[in-house]
Image 1 (cartoon, rainbow, N blue to C red):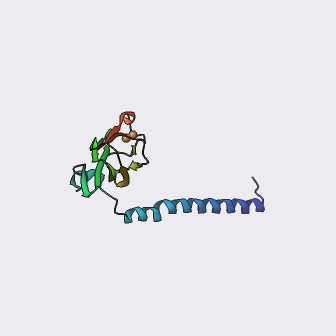
Image 2: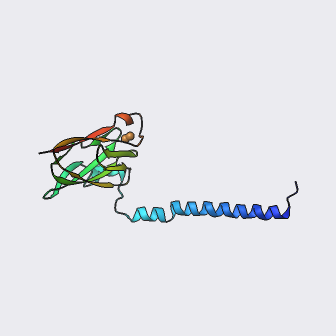
Image 3: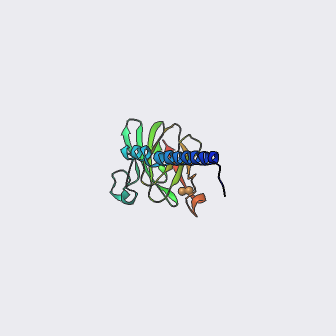
Length: 157
Ligand code: CUA
């Protein structure tokens, strides 16, 4: 088959463009992206959570007058602790990680919504008011028990 010189040039340009695009995608994925994640302090060894100060014993801790910190581990198929119990009229910072696969962590009826990724610690802060029970749902498909995976956040007096 005969290829006209013109077509050869276009072909060559197309290949260069494709390589350029591939290059930029790859660079974006393994270049600065990874460095940025590695720089953050939110990394954790998902296989050694029992050796971590926060997640060895998932719990709620008081850190200020009306401030609490909750350390939450998502797993197939639930959340630990459950329920998460906090006093009314407080600010609760939740640190969430997973010990197996990617899960979701959404406090139903609030804007607290994040992913729980093994090896990473996500942080969301919620302001709670009146005593109330909130459901916590997993909104990332995580296996056979996904649809039944839920937790509770109890705001108590
Ligand atoms: Cu955990 Cu879906």
